[in-house]
Image (cartoon, rainbow, N blue to C red):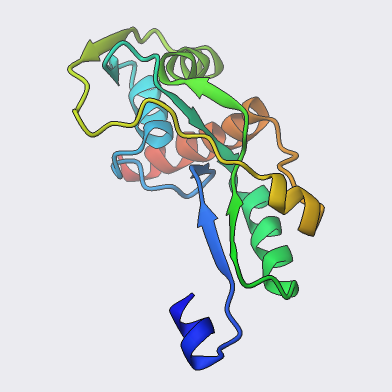
Length: 157
């Protein structure tokens, strides 16, 4: 905003929420790639706390479409892009186990003190200004991501 206000630059400001899809790094520490990797290796899926904290997951193609629409707009204020549908971390872990056909179990570890209880974007501005909202169901996006991970992990082993 400072560049826009002080320098008069044509800016766009996008707040990107949890995004997932093929080509994620398997060891980057985020829930989706970590759970998929652990499930495909039939290892325990590590959930911090009791797994009741929520997150929202937006498939990468939906995010790219949202970014494109923001860039084509003349909107200079911050705008949220993400999926407003929430899943608990425990639900995500169980869904990935089911989708991979894994024999994994979920194990629980101590929740870090700085871990947010809820992370859900308000995308009402994106809906109104850009006519944008995610269209890829989480399960469909996870299946595409899992398929990519199956190929990738076979190549690096």
